[in-house]
Length: 138
Image 1 (cartoon, rainbow, N blue to C red):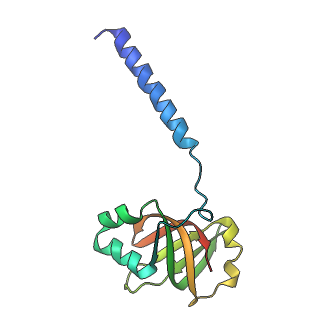
Image 2 (image 1 turned 30 degrees about the vertical axis):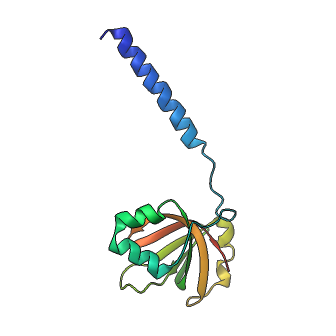
Image 3 (image 1 turned 90 degrees about the horizontal axis):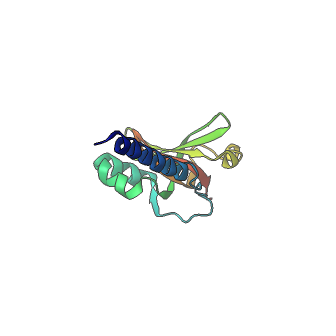
């Protein structure tokens, strides 16, 4: 190979990489409030799915808008963002829902032990199932 072909190849790959990076960076954000939930389940069902077979649960839930119903076991506000932990039937693990800043304003109206319906984007499983950009449905 000549030096010109190598340089051309590097420039071409750099150009393609820049285009892909630009498209990913400018990808529109999902408005959870306006989108319909892909799946609706209870907190226990979602956690059981991840505990039983994480790979299969990732295919079903990961990156999708999930509507989850459960009982509040913990309420927190960190850096003006509220988070709600939902009880499950498992000894370890729960569903952790991080609210949007706008929805966090309503967190003072919630109580531990209250049943709640939330909608958010599932980002995975780390001992708890994580939902982000959550909004309160009821």
